Amino acid sequence: MALDPKIKTLTQTVGVVVLMGGLAWASVPFYDWFCRVTGFGGVTGVSEVASDEILDQTIKVRFDASRERGMPWEFKPVEREMELRIGETGLAFYEAYNPTDRVVAGSASYNVAPYDAGGFFTKIDCFCFEEQVLQPGERVQMPVTFYVDPAIVDDREGQYIHTITLGYTFHEIDLPETDQQAALEPAKKTDKTLN
Image 1 (cartoon, one colour):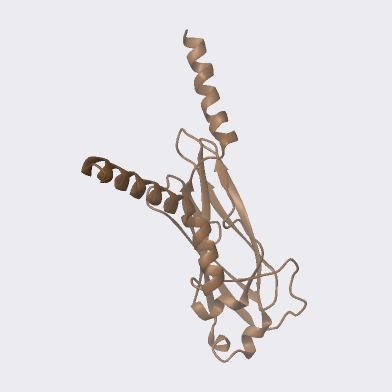
Image 2 (tube, rainbow, N blue to C red):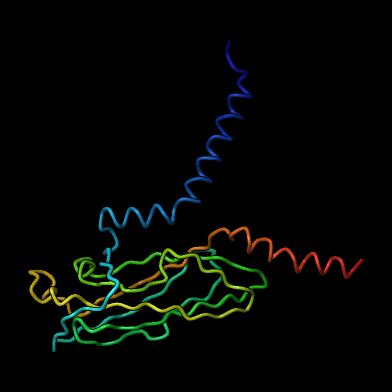
């Protein structure tokens, strides 16, 4: 039995919409996985402790911030650049501000440039790929703790790197259910007072 052409077209259209919605929902976790597997975007090292070796040589670290199109937050590094000794633990802050009158959730992806520096840039603590929820008018500072691995000075390509740029891009994501409920409650209370 053949399907009616209208039903077939409707089924295909619904399938495409569901597929696109699923891909949009999975884009940030997929990008995280893709970066970790392929090294795209200058994947960084991760450590829970500081480097046990600090060299006298210094390196500049620059900080960059951007937003995905449509992300309503303001987002910027607190300090644009710092110079530290290779192996020394650095602490930088990024500031996010929600100028809207609604609760907005976001998640940040990162990249490191030049590409060859990614393996030597080691993050101890970072806000990337974690859900951040800002209330209307809320401003937060998010820390990044890191060091540049001393092995960079012995690497054939790495020894010529004198400046590393760490960039974050914030993407708007769906609010968690608890925050969705909280965002709706004030509206309900307002409605009740009007009645």
